[in-house]
Length: 394
Ligand SMILES: [Zn+2]
Image 1 (cartoon, rainbow, N blue to C red):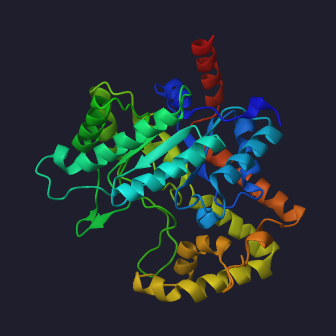
Image 2: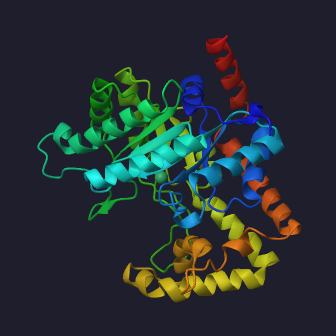
C-alpha cells in the first residue's frame, strides 16, 4: 500500500472550501462490500473531495452494529482509496454521542477516541447535543453542559493528536427531535452562543451540525409508505449560517440526514458552501439491500425475516405502520445479528458475496455517488484542496 492515499485531516478540506459553493459528501458506509470502492471511484472520476465516516453506534470498540471496529473501517477505506488512486479524502468519527454527560460515559468515549486516533482518524464529530438544559434561563445556561463536555473532549483529542492536524465538528440541537409543534429547529442565537463559548475555551470547530428539519434514516408517511424528505428548513438554515458568518466565525454547517432528499432539490436549493459537509448514510445501506434483493434473494429473505421477527413488536410500539417501515428502520441491525450462542448469523455471508454481486454494488454506488457529487457541486473540489495544501505546506 502506498502512503500517498492516506486520509487527510478534514480541517484542510474545510479551510480550502470555506468560501466555495460546494458541499463535501460524507458517507456512512455501514456495509462496505463493493460500496466503498464505488464511491471512491466516483470521487476520483469527478475529482470530488469525500469523507468516510461511521458514528459511535455504527462502529465502536466492539464493532457497533456494523461489526466494523475503527481499525477495520480505516483499513478498508485506505485499501479502497489506494486501489482507486484517490488522495483527497478524510476519515471521520461521526456522532461521538454523549447522552448523559456522566464521568463514566466521557471516559468510555475517550477510549474510543484513542482507538480511532491509532486507526488513523483525523476528523471528529463531538455530539453532546442531548445535554440541553430545559430549565436554563438563558441560551448560555441551556447550552452550558453541551459546551463544557464538547470542550473537554475537543481538548482531549487535541492532546492525543499531539502535533497532528484534525478537523472538528460539533453539534447543537438534537437532529430529528420533535415536539407538538413539529420539528425543533436550532436558532441562529443558539448556534452563535455555542460557537462563541467554545471559541472562548480555545475550541474552534470547522463545521457545526444543527437541527434544521432533517431526520436520520429512511422516512415514512402515516400509512408506513416510504416517502421523500422535503422537510429541511432552508430559510432557517441560511439564517443560522448568516449569523455565524456575521460574527466572523470560521465555521460552516454540516447537514445531517440527507437520505431521501431529492437530489435535484439539493442541487437547486441547498446553500452549498454555507452547508459545507453533507452526510449520506442510510442511502448506501438501501442500495446494498436493493442489489441483494435481486442477486442474492435467499440471503435477502433471511435478513428480512430476522428483522421482522426481532423488531416487529418494538417497531409497532414506536409507531411503525408497515413491514416496509419496520424493515427500512431496523434492517441495519441484521448485519451483526447473532444466534443464541453468540455466533454471527449473516456477517460472513455478507462479506463473502461473489464477485459479480460485489461488482454490481460497486457500479451502483459509483453511479449514485456521481449524482450526489453533481447535486453537491463538489466536482473539482479535490483540486482546490490540493492547491490549498500546497500553498500552506510549501
Ligand atoms: Zn447525523
